[in-house]
Image (cartoon, rainbow, N blue to C red):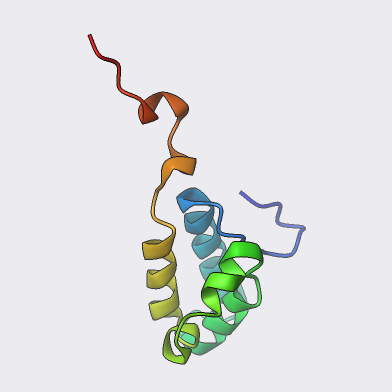
Length: 96
């Protein structure tokens, strides 16, 4: 999880980072009194993207980029648990 003193960012490194990012965005929106303003939340989240996540997000349609319900769902679909999140032992099966 990211240090609360640092600016929030999301680089698209995998499912765990994505889930942490969504939780922190939701918490930030709640603290700002914007938890029901899905356009504001989406704009805030978009301002946090960097690297692979930024390039991916710029390919989304305007409706998805402007609505947190759609954007958070797209994030979870794109950055579902993947090999980066699996412990090394679970990637291989042993033949007995």
